Length: 357
Image (tube, rainbow, N blue to C red; front, side, top):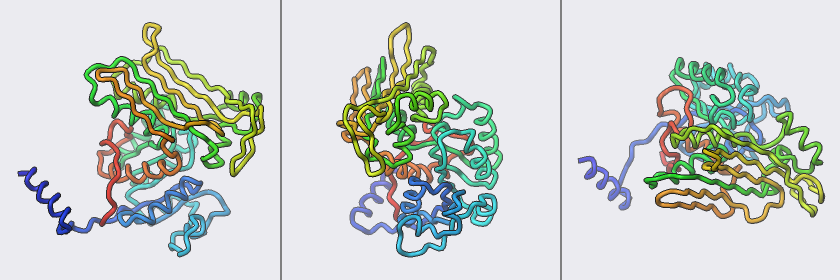
């Protein structure tokens, strides 16, 4: 019976005769108005199935400004930036908060706590939130308890971590009857990315500056170790012998981006690897090369299994744009899921959904 109903619906849709009942719009607050947050605002405003009801940021230069001014939109929206999240969330009562403020969980924990206490679901780009129990088990427990207590859901996601080096990897293993090893490589030309990311990977620094900042955890890509452990958890693999390395990439020629110049001999970015071994043999590896001037950018997943599988995204998945896409496409899944702190392996397969209402 269900299959006949689905067939009639598809047939009616093709003929243009299906009239779906109008769906309520998803009420959204944007928390954080950096480059990703501003792009998310534009995307939310362009979607008829989303309704932007508020925006939060601590930057005094953005306070009380219409989000249209920050987003390059001509028409005012009536949504003004607030630095009082408790008050704004209490008044606007969003169904979901898109959270894009920081990479480290201890730094953003108070922000997430406020959102959950207000009874809002949260989709965050905080990299450590992909698998928060790895580094911060106590904070993860607190967040899970808060989310369950308010009957809402909290998810950490993005493009990397959150998609190309973990979720896609797990999806690629679906047809396998045997699985021996997984290898993932991501090469990103950071010259095409936003300035904060170029600074984050050390572009333009000396080797000494790079080393000092890596030691202080003030530089580098956050989330690769989380991706490694998420993949292992999804596959049911135990990790014992894990090695993580972060090295500078230094070019022999000068490279310019719209934001800065990297001179020959200076650091252009990072080469970050996480590898797991069993009985001395590597069986899971993630290799990230992110630097200004990288040639032939791509994302590649190689599955040593039965059958063997290789997935390759030529040019790579565009980080900034795709991060916004992941946020928006995961929001309805988060709202409709059971309460608690979730990971990408707890929710349905992420996908684009038509935005008709």
